[in-house]
Image: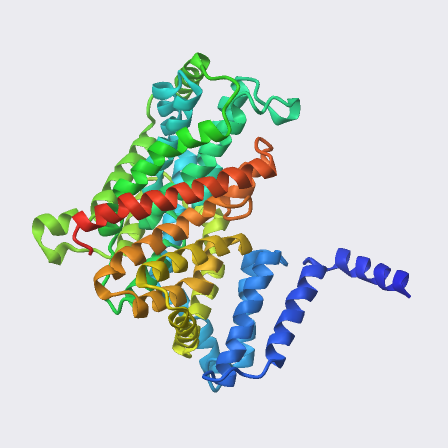
Length: 501
């Protein structure tokens, strides 16, 4: 009997376009949640949406199907179950409501813009220039990769495209130039160190700009909601708040990794020659690269609200409008074409799954689930008798280290962040609320350091074979703690100077 069941399972597992075992687990989670009596304080429809949302998160963690397919599944189930409305027409309206959200389109359009970095070769040129400048020692190459990440971050909201698609190929090319190759067992020469720096630069730069990773606009929106509008971060104020602690983290990170996982080769003069050779092969800056640079400068000026500073508030432009303007400039100048826009699958994939997760998070808030969860968490914390400082610390650490359970930063933020912010808003004195929320914002990116599945960049860098699993987790934990301490101490002082508390 067991043999027949196993054969049947193996057949279906090979026939269906999803992982059958994880799919059965996710389905079981859904039915178990639906069978649980509705908790006091929630309506049956609200609890139904909780069940759908948590099942979607479980399915994402277990990687049942591509995340876009699972997001579409959530849209279908929300619409059919009518947990947000009294008719299917209203329910499908709710299910698709977030696709009109300008924040989502900001991310999608900016991903499309970042395609020009790869198509024109400007991203590789920037990386090679920093290697040429800093590459005489292995640690200098590490700093070159970190600075390259920093320069690209404001314009590449797909941290995966930036760290995995642009910087990682440069890193691998440099490692191969020194015969540091996992296939040959020589990854320890320079490759392990450079791969770790390549990866750990990614979460740090993601924390420094709203447009540096996809979930940041969602974080910004949650902070505004949880603070009842008292803390309204813009592109400029976010960048200013994260500037000093972020730069110090970028300065410290290559040194810490150098101590934790030192390269066998400390001196690398050939790296400079390699960079010069590659730059010579690329030739002078092409017209299309010039257009990319000009577009980036335009985007930076407009996102930083410089025209409004000079000419008055009438010249203020919404960040999403600015992103569309930048994309239009690239298209009409021929820097990228419409086929590039249509073929950028990551952008349209992000639109679907990000839109679905944002929709469910918004509906959970609308149906009172976030308030219910926050009130219960608040009561438990109050009962513990902790002071507000301990409360803030526990909330930040619980949020950050729960990322061990998530394979998607967006899923984690959508599932938990608003509730944690809401609890903090109720229990932390108003005068100290801003630094707590800024720590949560920083932590939402820093938590990507922890695992080899933490975000889209991690499986790309880990999959190249330069870093063992144990070393990855060890370095990730240490760096997470170090960076949280820097943001808490130096960031706290910096935010005091800026007048946030």
